[in-house]
Length: 447
Image (tube, rainbow, N blue to C red; front, top):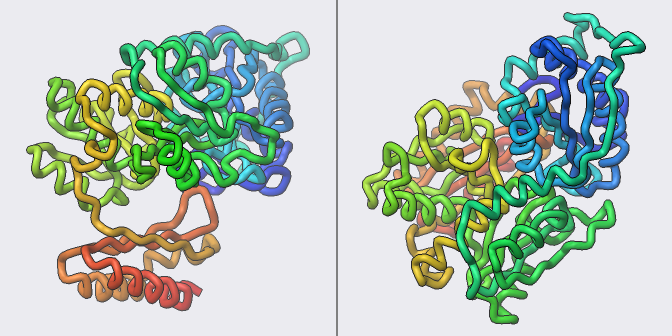
């Protein structure tokens, strides 16, 4: 990826890598691009999650946009998919979400959306980087009488809430625990679940600026699992900090990950005649069990690189109606232009109600292969060395040890200074040993 943008916008530790000056510079560049495509004064909407640094960066983003002549509407705390939806619904020229998604509160990030509700293309992000880092285009500040205005619009999110609630029918009769991760969904989930008449209990809905994703939400589902099992819930759902992903636990407290979401929804859409071209879009990190599921039901799947933007690109290119990631980004283009955790949760729960099956029975739709992942800290130079012939040769040799019953995937993180190593196979003890061996060897090869 680029020098500022990763696989999901700009991200870094607030006030260090991502400071006020960078937020202003990027927003000025983005505002120039947006303004050039409009014959009238453009309006840009800005949302944020619950992080301590959110208001600081919100002010910087708004200042940058208004300084180049864009009017700004501040939505307040909203999920990322709400910004994507409201860009189109409000007729805005662009949208900005200030969030670091699943990362701890010390991190923050900035995601940009175009007027269509889709994230910016690589070309647009490269142009912004060219303006900010290389001065390829001069910043064109607005004349005094053309400076953009900044105003609050905290009511607009109700349009998103109505839209998401309207995607399903009555969900009464199912006892649900909802983990909001002390993140953006705390502002929307209660209203959405109330509108569909769900019997829902909400956890981690007391954000203080520093507790977003802290041992809760989609990255830490063990606590939710215990709560569901001990209190007799039928299912639990967990969002991340900006609610663009969702994972779940069954009535026994066991995980339902993004791959299982896709299998469950793909089977339902297939039965209802809604699975366009009989295909769905996972990523290369999806479990082998998902691919086996597709074969069993006569479906095709076309895995993409990791990142919901790549899933979306493939969805649009192939005309597919469902895609997602094991991490819980589920995209249903019929309803949303990006991953939406609350939408995914409602779809899963409705599928459960329509089938009459327990959540644990749903999981049997696919057999999960053991999968182990470790991360190693990595500089940009180490990430580049992953393409070296010596590294590729080593990984080929290690893969052959799995004898066709597994695979090794090594990839650089697009949002963190990490290299991720994932090994999958039938023999858990074997892959546990192999992944540790690979991590140590790669550390030496990449130095």
